[in-house]
Every structure is written in C-alpha cells, then in structure tokens.
Amino acid sequence: MKKLLVTGGAGFIGTNFVYYWLDKYPGDRVIILDALTYAGNRQNLVRAEKNSKFEFVHGNILDQELVETLLEKYDIDTIVHFAAESHVDRSITGPDEFINTNIIGTHSMLKAARRIWLDKKPKEHRFHHISTDEVYGTLTSSDPPFSETTPYAPNSPYAASKAASDHLVRAYHETYGLEVTTSNCSNNYGPYQFPEKFIPLMITNILNNRPIPVYGDGKQIRDWLYVDDHNRGVDLILDKGKIGETYNIGGNNEQCNLAIVNLVCPIMDQMFDAFPELARRYPNAPPSTGRPSATLIIHVEDRAGHDRRYAINADKIFSALGYEPKVSFEQGIRRTVQWYIDWEHWWKKLI
Image (cartoon, rainbow, N blue to C red):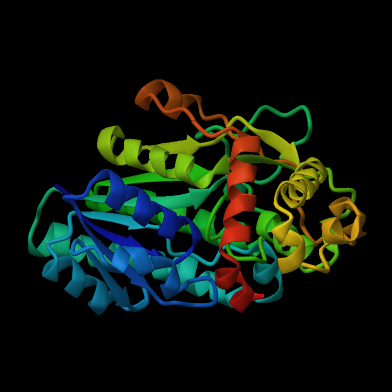
C-alpha cells in the first residue's frame, strides 16, 4: 500500500493520473498538492473528493515547509511530481514563471524530500519526476528518435526549465542518494486538457465556429500519447523501474499538426451527423450549417523557436518494463472529442 503525494494533481495529466491510481489501487492514499493556477482546476477532482483515500491540499511546491509537513503528516513514501508550467507560447512571452515553478519549485520539492526521507526519518521512498521530450531539442525528418541518452538541447524557455529540473533530480540522486526516477514523455492528449492546447483548442473552436490556427505550414511533427497510456507508463516505473534511471514514454505515433487537424475535423463532422441534437446545442458550428469543420483552418505565423520534429524511442521502457500503449490514435481522438462534447460545462468557463 502506497501513500502518494501528487503535485499538480488538479492539472491535465495529474488529474487523469489521480483517477487512474484511485481506480486501480483503491487501498492507496493519494494526497494532491496544487497551487490552482490557471491550468489547475479544483472541479477536475469532484469525483475524487468522494473517496476517503483522497485529500486535496491547496498550496505551492515553492513552499518547502508545507511540503515537509505533508510528507510527515501523511507518512508519504512516493512523490509523483507533475506540477509545472508547460505551455511553450506562455514561456516565450513570460519565462519568469517557468523558471520559478519548474526549476526553483522542483528544487524546493527535492530539498523537502531529502530533509524528511534522508536526514530526519530515513525510509524507503521514491521521487518520480515527470519531464518532457522537449528537453532534447528538435529533429530533422531523417534523425533517429530521441532516446534516454540523447544530449539535451532545449530550444524554448519551457524546455530549458524542464531540462534544468531534470538535472537537479539526477544530482540529488547522485549526490545525496535520493531514490529518484524520471520519465520524459511525448505530447499527451485526452480529457481535462486546458483548452489552449492544440487538440482541445481545435475541438472547442469548431464547436464555437472560431478559426483553427495552424502554425506555419503545419508540418511540425510530434509523437502523440493518450494520457492514460502515459499514466500506465508511470505506474510501471514506480513498480519496476530502476532507481536513478530515466525512461522515455512514447506512443510510437508520429503525426504532423496538419494531419491531426485533418483527422479531428472529419470526426467532428461525423459526430454532428450521428447526433442531430448537437446542431441544436451548437447552431453556429460549421457542421450545423452544412459546412465541413475544415473550412475553419487558417495558417498563422510560426512561433519563435518552434521545434520541427519530436520523436520518442521508447524501446527501454518497452523491453525493461513491458510497457506498450493500448489506445490507438484514432481511438484516443474519438474519446477526446466525445469528452469535450459531454463536458461543455467544464471548458466553457475556461475560454
């Protein structure tokens, strides 16, 4: 039986992780620490609040004293550290918050873990750090995918802040013996993702008859991973991962942005054909007026420092831990489209 402290548990991936964990391990205790910034939403956790094994704490990872108190009060043995500023565009216009949260905040967490787990009351423990494939930089069309040994070459303030946090986690293991693991994941998508992100932005813009912006030529390539496939990977690392190791979690699913738009648009059109009541709910959406959703696509100026391609080599977690993604890309997109249609009350407040 584990006692987990999940940072950023009211955000997109953290929320999905909390539900994944509570459903799979009903005997475990799960404590959430979240500052409830713009991307953290307490309403995400309404169902979890009914579980006696769950508790929410409104607080900041920069508050080392609070983190130490939580580690002691709940006898925490596992930290799953999701909390991070993660939107690249925001990091370009306002990098300071990314430095504070992603670097200084992670260091605060590490200091708290070291003090309680190593210095004050030594015990078996795990600090699992969630990172991103963006720390590796960019690839050409012919480059091999990123592996765990690919040199870091971050190109945005967001990626640089995550790279720094990765190095701090490694240093606390090598220097102090903190029992850590790190996972670098590819682009996640699924329920509860903040509407500014690429896939939910497309879905909600179609429903609201707003343009679908595509950066540049739309041929930027990412490896896409359904959020619960990511969480299954984290679960395996916590269960069987080797202390001090890094594992890439990917979907073996490279897609360019334009291809994703051209997948989502017809699926939205099909949903309106299958469920005529959607036209009553969204009378201005293109499918309600007889137009394809794709008529909303516009190309906009590419953003600064936009990496051309990310791709994950996940052979290590496949072979060492028996991981494989279970949700195909089309399955995941259809589930995601359905969720945003069903949960209009959630995203309407955020756009």
